[in-house]
Image 1 (spheres, rainbow, N blue to C red):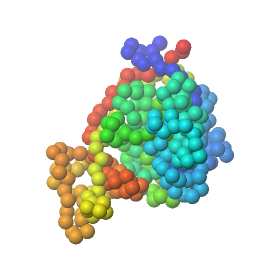
Image 2 (spheres, rainbow, N blue to C red):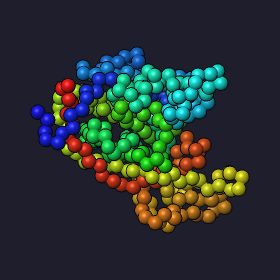
Image 3 (cartoon, rainbow, N blue to C red):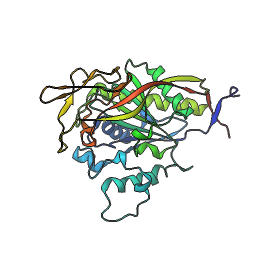
Image 4 (cartoon, rainbow, N blue to C red):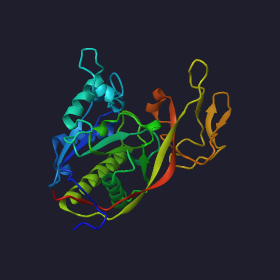
Length: 314
């Protein structure tokens, strides 16, 4: 029997592993291609694991996307558009993926999606959580962190509407985004790929043990909750005039206090952080975010709790 207060939840029978959502983030591309040729590593007896290369055209070009960012395309508006010849490439793909692995928000959607990404920022091993109210996913991430015991594995919570976007992983009932770095775009580093590989297999192990009936006791999880994007300073023509300050560069997850240097202008002026409290920046100087006007995200530390979880027998 499950413990008193335990969450008895449905089994996790279908799991999607997405690689190539951004065509120049190559750890996920290489892993998914490998698993498509040989699925033995990711097979688990209690569930079906489906590796999927999400944007082959962008992968072929080794570019982030063809027409628009696929990982921002899974909005209600895009998914409800009528198909036409002029539809953007990634919007068309989003609709196809939504039908294959969703539809988003439906009972027939895949149970879990693992979305594999690289970052040029000094993020280490980052797991992205979309809500603080999902006992299963909190328990899954707690298991990964405690099983692998990476010295640099942090959890980013993207729950605040100010930092949310139409991510591909949202098609599934539960989801985890993996951001592993630093790794340049269009490059594969063996240590970064191996870390991602371990994260995926740990998540699959958790799903298998859960499906077998293992009960996971109540837990707490320390996360960094994002609440604001910080843009680059620009001139009247919209050109960036300040770059990430050397004292902030590579300091993802580190405390940033009011008055600390944030940017350095090209004429040598230091721009300091003007907030009223200490924060923790992430995605500092991410290459892909220059087009999105984002220099870094601000987060605060919070602790989440999850009830014990056990698979329902019904």
